[in-house]
Amino acid sequence: MLADSDTRWKWGALTAHRLVPEDLDSASPRRMDGFLLRGRATPTVRQLAEVGVRADSLREVTGVEFVSAVDRERYDVIVLSLVGGAVQAMLHGLARAWEGAARRPVVVTGYVGVVYEKLADGLLLRHGADVVLANSRHDAERFRDVYTGVGASADSVVECALPFLGGAPYDEKARERRAHPGGTVVFAVQPSVPDNRADRMYLLRRAVQHARAHPDREVLVKLRSKPGEHTTHIEELPYQKLVGRLGDDVPKNFRLAYGNMGEVLDTTDLLVTVSSTAALESLHRGIPTAVLTDLGVREVLGNHHFLGSGCLASWDQLDAGHLPEPDPEWVSRQGVAADGAYEKAFDAARQRVAELAAADELPPLAPYYTRTTAPGYLPARLARYGFEPDGRPRPGASAGEAAQVSGLRRVVRNTMREAARGAYRHGVQRVAPVIRRMGEL
Image 1 (cartoon, rainbow, N blue to C red):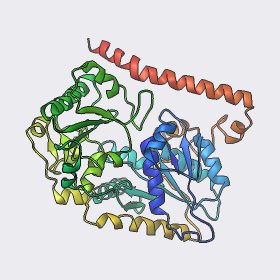
Image 2 (image 1 turned 60 degrees about the vertical axis):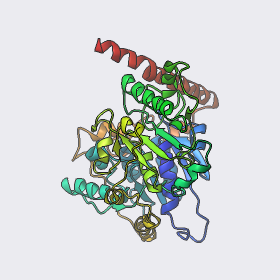
Image 3 (image 1 turned 45 degrees about the vertical axis):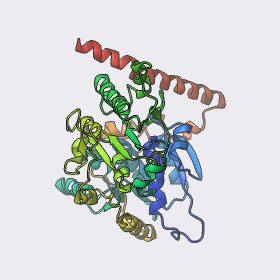
Image 4 (image 1 turned 45 degrees about the horizontal axis):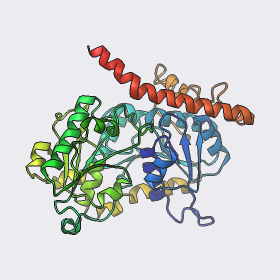
């Protein structure tokens, strides 16, 4: 399994476990090797530990090194849990590496959560995988429409669900046994939504005001990462830093929290968010869930995805005691129904993978984007990950050359890489916001 961020690691690793049947190869026990694609969002040890999903082996690689590794070693299934451009690069690289091979692994990809932007762009970059997973009936219909709309095969699209749903169903009576009789309200924040200081400070202040207005409740701001760490999306304005602007006037029943989202939901009585995938996890458990409308219902925020859900609400309404009631049909179409159907959500995908893995021969990987269909777009996407337009490694990017680097040069390279990452984070989190503010003057 190859992933490029903490959330994609979580999705990819859990998906791999759910898709591969126990008896796929009875001659040997099931094994999962993990690969982390080297880049700005490569997860840290702390982030991986927080996700709580482990592999039998784990190493950081470039795209070319990954293609070389899976070409040399025998795998039944490869899960690509990456941003769209990286998926496309790996598909072309693997297609080139496996030319003429009688057998090859089954290649699976998909999305880590709600798909509310760049639908066509992201989907076409994923076309070419043997299986493209859709997390709901709603997504499966949209995915097939996009593929057939460009004249590409939609046979790879398979409906399933988000692999990390689960946990104990919400028990409202449990609130009475907790330290805060009013229950626990969790505000699940997002790294890039909203994307400006004013809106993020507004949401933070409203969470504090809610805690102040309800002293019998505990109000948690669930954070995604620590300052300096990256997630799937860049976080230029971490809430940890913004909370310092509130001074000492913060009630005792308000606090910031890290940790595994599943464990946080175990003690949640109301989940509040702008558009986080955590809302789907919460709805699956039957926890009251509110998708905020304070900043409008807008595509740029992603909360438009929840139109018709019954979950849209404002902080004013929540302050007054309102608890949203989700629409059952909407919840069902999103693949998060907590009526037992989720247990069978991966049956079709598991069967498809098993059939492909058992086939005597699979056709070559054939992405929609080629030098013929997208000559002005594809080369740049592949070059970013070290590949030529035909899938060959670019000069100087081969794994063989990388393996010959001396020990001293490797240390220097790693040191320079860490320094570059630090400089990049500083530029993104400190310099870029200042430049934008100056441009608005």
